[in-house]
Image (cartoon, rainbow, N blue to C red; front, side, top):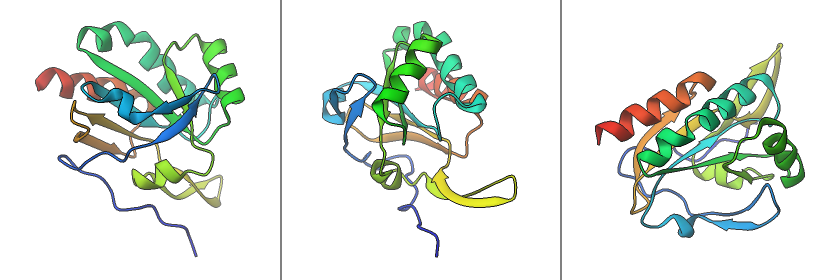
Length: 160
């Protein structure tokens, strides 16, 4: 039987709190973002083609996010060492968080069955969330394409 994610989040829901290690091995607490708007996106695995496209798109848009007062976090099941290599190789410059047991991904409702090359597995469903200053979801995008993360976040953030 497949492991199911928690219910999906929607606008107005409180975003789950978390404590995760970043790419440098430091513990990052979501409570540190209180009073800030942020984009958090979940991706399956560092250094894969789709995840690289997504991360580089975010990297290239960091000036736009900064201008709009929007912080960015990315979460995957990868260990901090792998995240650090990904960050350094791509020059990402934003926080990558490690969720190896996918407990935070489950809390956000982004874990589910995936089929790749005819093989079914349980993993991260690429998803993005725009969170407001009070920790509430402004918008949730499930099954987002790598190239859609930035335009959706910028459009929604600019429209608020």
